[in-house]
Length: 288
Image (cartoon, rainbow, N blue to C red; front, side, top):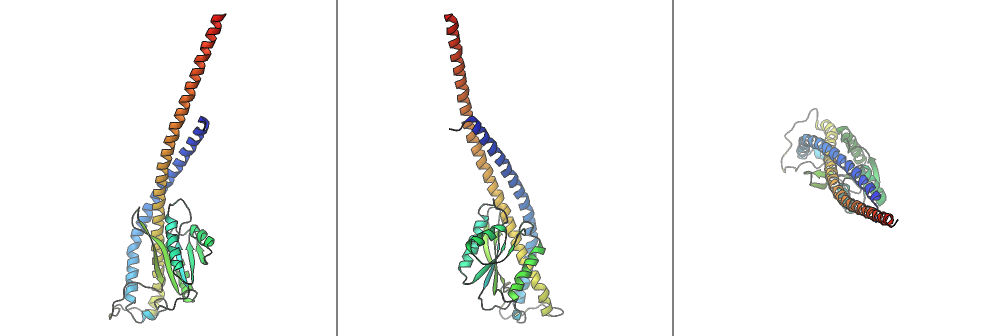
């Protein structure tokens, strides 16, 4: 049976943990609001870039570009976005399960990982890791996304990989997040309209336009995926920390009840011993 001293130590420990969890929940809520604002601002940009890719797919000349033209797939790469830190519930578990499902469906596949948790998981599984990126989800700058897109484009252009997919978590609400796998290369874009040519004219020529547009498109897709994943991570962490705070409050309440009972029992025992000692002293005094 725990003593009152042990119970006091446990109560102090639970109270400290509760304060830490509450602070982490507040930090996650603040970051979530910022990520949501950035995500809402970035979505129109991504939609416009996807519309541009859809228009280009109606151009026969654009479809001859190696980044649009499909090829025989002998090696698939998956760019998997996870978190660098834990304490975010099932966030990493769900996105890694989606990545594992994609890897199982591919004959020859490797991964490019963003996040320490993903790197640790794939290292344990013995999966081939082409590249790892740390500290990109916490900030999710467009410059990082553009750099990652350039690296993926280089690997694709050099024939190191024949297909590239992005595996991330889509943010729908604070409580709803959906792991997704989207093909990045070759560029899919929107649906190609049958029998219709691209009405746009490109200056100085389509080739020069694609040289500038493709890196921007890849950066936009990866940037949006990073923002979606970051918002999901913070939302899950906020909910997890709120749950931890509630659990700590329940434990604190139970420990307080046990502590009060033991302290009351100890006080009652001490009073009983004091009364018994007083009575004994009175009898001894009367006997003299």
